[in-house]
Length: 440
Length: 162
Image 1 (cartoon, rainbow over the protein chains, first blue to last red):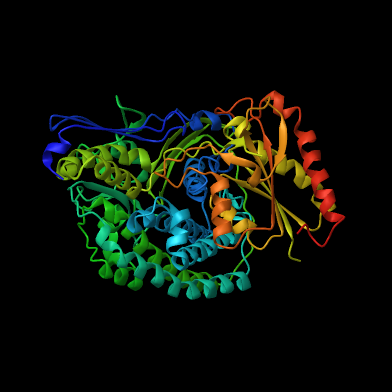
Image 2 (cartoon, rainbow over the protein chains, first blue to last red):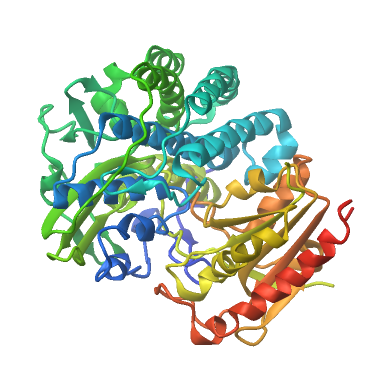
């Protein structure tokens, strides 16, 4: 197609009218000149912080678990850690390990969904996973099977697949039995061949992953004692920070949230104009700490530390799936070697302020709360990973579009949508209601 | 004992009437003893988890906040075959959901119950808030009774509804 044909372009992927809070992609090109290029996030304020004010410290994790259906365990864990920090509550080693195991289950749930249901259709050139099921039924069935196992895993430890009920400040309301954990361990071992099938399928279409690179800052958790590829403990680090680790209480100095004209969601920046969070950020900061199978998967895809192709975030998620399953198999042994003990958890209200941080599947998540002496929440602050990625998506657009503009409007639109999906965004999960018309 | 029927309440309880399905299934759980063949599940906004919840069941009943052009507070029973979803998904995120599409996926995978029933509840208010609007809150027992009435047909026909 000639350059002449693409002198003018008017892309406006605009979802606001029908789908609350989804991002809009705007590209206007006149006479070959890019006049407007924006990632707009017109998300309605969700007021979650206001909703927890006045509630007891014991109820915060239950309320915030409803923020998101995909990251509900993650939100609950971040909140519980923040509450424990505010009230000075200690958690037993056993409960700590079971929480980490619970957290892994959600990472696997979410990554499988993203790789299989959202990203794979892009790689296969299918509009969504439903038509993909017709095109690659066996692959989709394998993905569904792994997703089911991750769901049952969450169910066992969190008491429900979504919106956990076993987490309380100071510990857990329920400890699984040895038999249940051994069964889970066996199931996870049996899942490894399925993961390999998924990796082979993704590798077979990996040539369709755009070869786009842009240097940026990658921010994630980092745990040094002991060195761990962490999703749960540790402090905040970045690829621009010389491996220094900040305590989670300093998260405001990292996110530096600001209001941007093109978005009602807050944006974030640290050492540069933008930074990225998510699986690729975790990999770039901690990749050498992956489990052997995680490292093998990274090698298979040529994923190396320092990768700055945002489309490879999906591959980093797949790599993490291997790490999560392999690490969890070993963690169950660690838990059972010490012997399971019933725990009675008690806590007392007191005034305090605390921050909690964990890695959501799609990147680092911060919660912070303040309580009065009766344990009532007086202030809350939540900073989700997707908001931390918005500025980075905009900067990617600015470098990527001039490189692909000659491919024409449809290709530009498709590739920008794919780029957004590669960040695995959580833009709006606040409403899921049906909208229907009757045909019979 | 494997339960042949599942009742699933959907929605976000932080968005007022959006959480109607969850509120109704929470109310129905008080009557779980009357229905030994039935699982009651608050699935919240779990999206694709629905695929796994309905697998292996003979019958699935969903309760969800539904914009269907009725009066706020109205409840209507329908099947997936009787409606067309007019919800538009951006396909940008895992965080959007249209369970009609998930049911289609279950059909394609050969993992769909033989019978699916949906109880749609027309919302009065979908905005941040932990409580249902008064219009819906006042009718919560009526909604629960409507679903219990549907379930009473199942217990009188333990062979299922195929």
